[in-house]
Length: 217
Image (cartoon, rainbow, N blue to C red; front, side):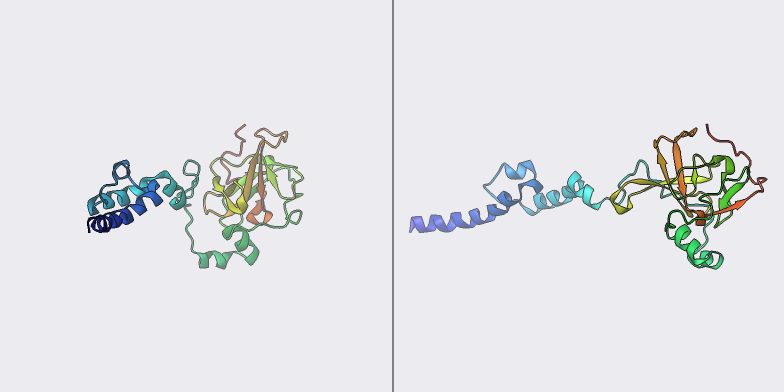
């Protein structure tokens, strides 16, 4: 009788210690150091409350991959609704400016456009973005600018298509312009290339709205 009684007492204890061996990562050191008795409900709740602080969990549930560079929390002054934008933009302008589309290379109105003076405004809100002096020949298939009017363009981290790029938008309305690339070796004052969709722009020779068209360089 005694051997049978001992087995009946030991087997339930063994059965209750199995979860400890299967998942030690999510248990505290105090819990792992003792196998004489299962954790009480108070210890279990402490382990569950501590789990979300493990870095492994944070990597899966964090929605901000680049908190030090992201400027997505900044809201542009022009806060028109989607329906209001559809009323003033044609379908192609809406696709690019509001839905972050891209025109086909070499097809844009301003790809080979090199005026001696003038301003390229946002096609959505008419805010001045670039001057004729900022434009240069890059051969990329889209209008290229080595700089913008100070404060006119805002940069965002763009992680679409499995790569990290820098998107540029109109500061005033948030309309998508294109992307900016650095360090490509162009002989320009900034060594930057603002690759902009022609559809996002509207050219005018009137420079009166530009207070300081000079480059940062």
